Length: 329
View 1 (tube, rainbow, N blue to C red):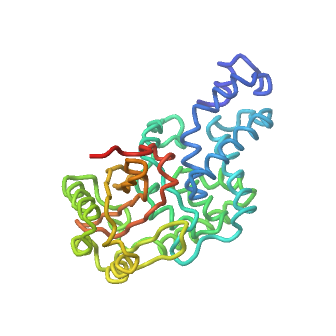
View 2 (view 1 turned 120 degrees about the vertical axis):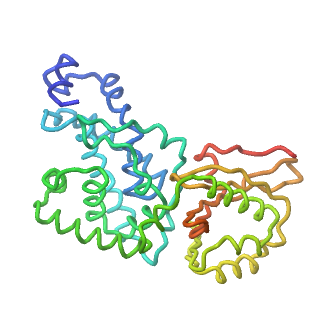
View 3 (view 1 turned 30 degrees about the horizontal axis):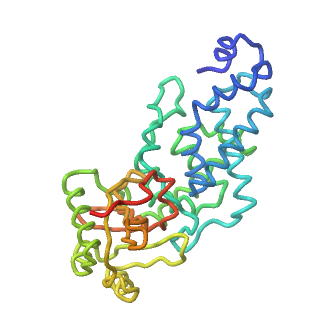
């Protein structure tokens, strides 16, 4: 919706004439897509939530600056991007390194499903593309410095013109184009070489069957069966615990050393996060008489094999809308 049309529909000459409930209603329409935008910038679901709240607060305080040069949505994106850059300057002045992102958090598919379909009248309103929300993409983005990261997301994900990005960042178009090329090069360094390897595979019958076998082998703590599903160069990490492990033998040896094959009383619940298959594991607790949250394995599947496992701790269960406990079978 164009800015002047929005103001006309509201019957006001400027946004400063709009009361707070009406303004909040306008802003809330864009909460989910702004949250996803901030999540891409920050890699953390919780930081994204805080930043969206900060965005709405800044937008209300500066509502008189909405004067019709852009859509209301684009205006909110500008504020959200700057709020992300401010947070990064305070908390994470240096980007991720070494292929791992300790602050990485998963994003539940059920919330991604709330995103609106693209609107031809507002090009920045686009349905989320799978390859820009998968964890491999998020990890690569977090290895970029904040400003090139913003340029990449605004230009390549949201499709903003270079001049609009330059205006937002207070930079020249040439600088923005240069930053975009550097960012794309940085992404290539941290994404798997073949595009199909980092966008994963469609959720087809073959993938579902692999996830089923992975779940059964995990519950049975059958390490040999699990190893047979892993590609030679599979990657494993468990944020926020430090460490990126690469290679089937390295990962399997780590499981053996941790005593995984001796773990008893597991149950697995299939789910999906970041448009990827995932399994939430619960462990039987005799005292509570129930299975309680343990970990969530998010899988990247390529060509019928598992190419990456990112495991998250039990504190992610509530955010993902997973049950707090499972009853005895």
